[in-house]
Image (cartoon, rainbow, N blue to C red; front, side, top):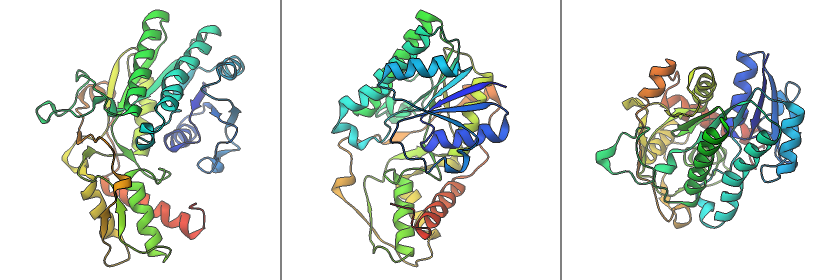
Length: 328
């Protein structure tokens, strides 16, 4: 039985990863959370995991965390991840995502931890990749065009330093767009589904408010992604980068296509939508499409869920939340 530490366990991906590990392994799960973190995503497993208060920007708390848990593996998922606010508070993003990662690695160094580390990077680091360079591979040059992406690129560089300087066994992945239940409603598909469910329940009127919807992505269900994360720690080589996600034509859509599919799934016959300036980013990434051959060849991983599964599961999640008045 291994001791697994998850930073960001109360979040979207972290909570799904905890679900997966509890179901598929006999590992003991520890989670780092801030004292004021919401527990709604993990309330159903609170009796099966051990939560420890701390903060990525508080190195002392991380040293105590590593000393007390002595983890065998660390899934470092804790981050500020919503792109839009990063223009208004770039320092906070750099502090949490880059400096917070340094703090975690320093805690490991101080405590002489030998834990294997899974690092969750982002394809946003690639920026506006020209059409002729699509699909993106592990060799594609990064060119961040928003503060969030810059902070994650810095995190990535930091991991390479600790991997080479201290021989930390760090597995780096960039998982392309992953969606599903528990996704905060500030993100595209979840935001569309939330508004549709509100309209269905008579709690708001249309039209739906959207931002830029022409960007194209390859989408993967979050439950498939967390399985891929676990497999990567079992089969991938530390120090290397792997791109993860669905890549066949049935998973590649624009946000507009996703929005219109969701509208067709609604119980309300006609729902319109309108672009609102407040939801449009200063800069956009028009296409993020991955070639995940390296990861698939190494692991034999294949996603099980379809794009429609993503949309249905997300819409049902918000329907249930709104029905139970648990959507605020």
